[in-house]
Every structure is written in structure tokens, then in C-alpha cells.
Image 1 (cartoon, one colour):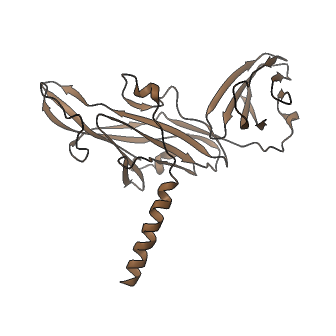
Image 2: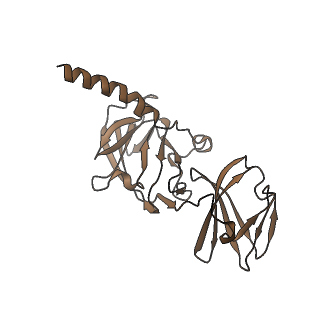
Image 3: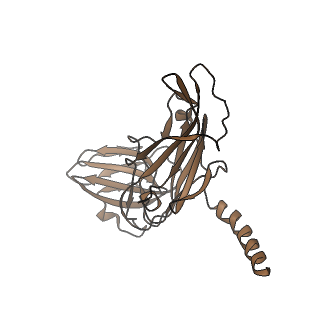
Amino acid sequence: MKKLIYLSLIVGCLNPILAQNVPTCSLDPVFTGSNKYGIWPDSATNFNSGFVNNSYLQNITVKVPKDTLQSILKLCFTRFVVSTPSNVVNYGLPPGLNFASSTSVVANGTVNGAPSLRFPGNANNCASVYGTPTVTGTYTLQIQIQAYATTTLSIAQCPAVPNYTSGLLVNTTFLKYYKININQSARLSEQQSVFPIRLSVFHSWIENTTASEQSLSIFSLSGQLLSRIQLEPHEIRYQAMEGLPSGIYMLKSENQGSSTFQKIIRP
């Protein structure tokens, strides 16, 4: 009995610590203010890229509709349940990344050995993909979404705040279009001579030092794409990094299918 009590105390102490590790997610204001429903980012925008051994964060906004008509019936959505498919390990995420929500109503335990999320009907909620990736590669995520609903006549009104524990499974969808690219990190000690883009001391201008076009992408360390610049051969571009606050950034230069990376400190 004493062992059980001690175990309960340990678990009780660990749960708040584990909960603190989940970053506070945020809703995308443009998506929530639109007349669209579903998940943001969409397939065209897709997820942030990341870098090995650097913190990664991707906010996800989910808008569940209130209802939909099916002939003379109306489906009143109570919840959408997100989980990893039974044949997929942890949504296919890169090693080191997790999928969870800081919103208590969204947490839905585990399904198929990975965290499951529950998004109530007629509501906006959020979640995050987060962590520190450890292996490079392009990872295609696989997400199972199950819609639950109650039914009523088409002329009736669905509740504004549905009971998210009620309803029957009415649809199952599998999403397979989200990708996360994890790139090798560059070290601050790496020589800039191997990088085709030269930066002035205070980053007031950048220069393409090669005789070919270069596409320069600027990322935050969490993998968020901040800017993309197309440079002509030997072009000097002024104020290219204007507006970026002081901090550490990752630069990616691409040309004819090859790419190089460099980490910089912006003063």
C-alpha cells in the first residue's frame, strides 16, 4: 500500500512538469476570422522546416464547424478526434518532435501509442508540433481525423456549445500531405567562405558572390520561414534583413538543386 501511495505521489508530481513542457499554442487570427473550416496551415502553406539540434515549433489552428446538412437531416458536430493511424508511429513525425496541445479540453490521452487530440464542435482550438529534431530528412506526416456528431431534422438548430463527449462516428479522414523538412544545422564557427552569400558587418546589405542566381531563405531557429530573396549573379541587395530583430538566424542558399546553410548572429 505504501508503494502505491508513493507511486501516486510521484505521478502527481510529474504530471504538472510534463504539462509545462508543452508550449502554449496560439490561434491564427486570419484563419479564425475567415469563413473557412478545418486545419491551418493548409496543404499549400504546409509546416515549418527545422534544423537538427535546434528547437522546433509549428502552431496548428483547428476550426470545427457547427453543423452540416445531409438531405433531411442535420449533423451537429460534437468533436473531431485527431490521432496517429494504427500502422504509423507518432504521426510519422521526425525523431525528437511531439504533437500536443496546451489547451486542457483538447487533450485526449493516447491512441495507438501517441498523443490524441479532441477538438470540440463549433469552436476554435490549437495545438503544436514541437521539440528538438535529431535526424535530417523529409518526413511526410499521416494524421487520422474522426468526426463525431449527433443528428436532428434539417429545420432544427444545433447547440451552440455541444457536448463533446456525445455523438456517433460519422466520418474518418486521413491526411497525408503535411511535410516537415529537417536540415543539417550549420555551426557558428563555420567559415563564411563556403557560403555563396556575403553579408556586411551589420547586415545592412548582402551580396551574391557567385556567377549564378541564388535563392536565399531566412529562417528562425524554430524553422519558421521569415523571408525569401532571389539574387542575380553578383547582385548586392541593400536592407535585405531590415525589420528582423537582433538574434540568431539560419540562412539557406539554393542553386540548381544544391543548398548550403549558415547560422548567423544579427547584432
